[in-house]
Image (cartoon, rainbow over all chains, first blue to last red; front, side, top):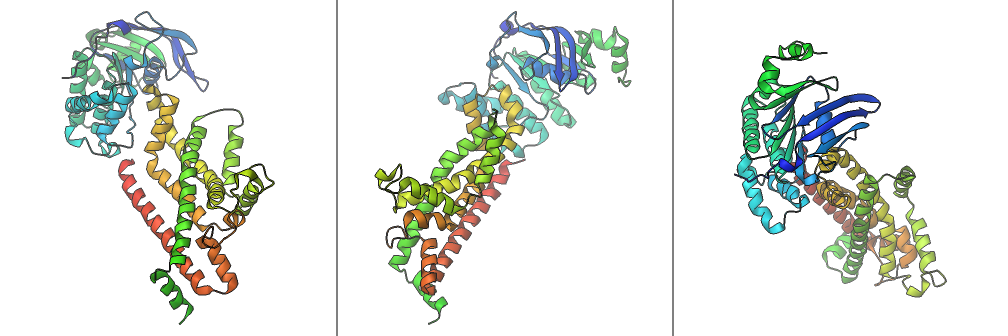
Length: 243
Length: 230
C-alpha cells in the first residue's frame, strides 16, 4: 500500500464569502465553509448547483470575484499538495505507465524512483496488466482509476474528485469507491462532488449540500441525510426535483 | 528505343550522374525540412499557447506565408546572398547551403502554421488538466508537441512535399550547376527545355516514387497514431 502524507498542515480548508462569476453568470454565491481533516467530505446537489466550480476554485482554476480560500490558515498552498480528478479525465496520448511517469516527472520525482512508484500505483488501482496500453483506449472505469493514480502520484494532502463515478456501471463504481476508501484511510483528505446520494451515504464523513451556488446545509452525513434542517435539503434528499 | 525505355534504362541502370542528382535533391529537401521542423514546430506551439496584442495578425500572416511564391523567396535570398548583398561575404550563393536556406524559409511557415493549429486544438483539451497539475509553460509546449506527434508528422511531410517538388527558388539561388547544385526538379526543367526527355522522365519517375513512399510512410504513422487517440 502506498504511503500517503499527513494532511494536517493544509487543513482546514476555509472558504470565506467566496463568490465566482463566469461570463457574467453567478456560479458561487458568498460560500462560507470549513472542510476539516478526516473522512471524505462529499458535495451534493443538483446539476448546476456549483459543486464543480467549488472544486475548481479550491484548485485555483477559477478565481473568485470576492472572498478568500485558506489552507490551514495560509493563503497559499503548494500545487503539489492538492490534486483534482476531473469528471471526464484527460488521457495523455501515451501508455498507462507513461501517464503516471508524466505525473511523477511534473511532481519532480527523481527519475530513478519513478519505476518503483509507477509499479506501486498500478498495483494500487489494479491496472498492472494494462501498463503498456495506450491510455485513450481504456474504458470509463479504467480511465477514472488511472486518473486517480495520476493524481496520487503527486502524493497530495488533499484530493478533489469531481463526480468520479458518473456514467460508470455498478462494478466500476464499486472499484472507485473502494479506492476512495483506501486513499482516505491512508491519510489523504478526499473532497468529492456527486449527485448520487447513495454514494454520499456510503463514503462521506461530512456532507455539504449546494443549491444555486450557495451552501444550503452541511454537517455529518447521518445528520444531513436523516434529519435535514432546511426545506431544500429535505426535498433533495427525498428525491424531489430541486429547481 | 523509346523515350520511356531510355528513362527506365537510366533509372535501373544505376546511372551515376542521375543518382548524384537524386542524392543532392534529397539532402537539400530533407535538410531544409529538418531545420524548418526544429524551428517551426516550437514556434507554432508557442504561438498556439501565448496571448498578446497582435497575435491574431501574426496568425493570419503565418497562414498567408504558407502560400508564398517560391520564386519570391528565391529572389529575397538571392539579394541577401549576392556579392553586393548584406550576407554576400559569406560566399553562399550558388551552393547547396543557399538552397537549404531558401527551402527552409519556404517550409518553415507551413510547419509553423499547421503546428499552431494542431497544438491550439489539443490545448483546448489539455488546458485544465495541465493547469491542475501545475505544469509550467515550457513543459506545456513539450507535452503538447509530444502528444500531437502523429499529427505533426503530417505537417512535416506536407513541408517535405513542398520542398521536394519546388523548383523556382533553388533555381535562383543554386544556379542549377551540373554536379554541384543540380537537383531533380531543376534538372527536369532544364532537360525538358533541351529536349532530353528520357532523363527528365527518369527523374520524374524517381521523384514521384519518393513522394509516394513518403506519403505511404505518413499514412502508416497516422494509422499507428490512431491507437493513441480517443
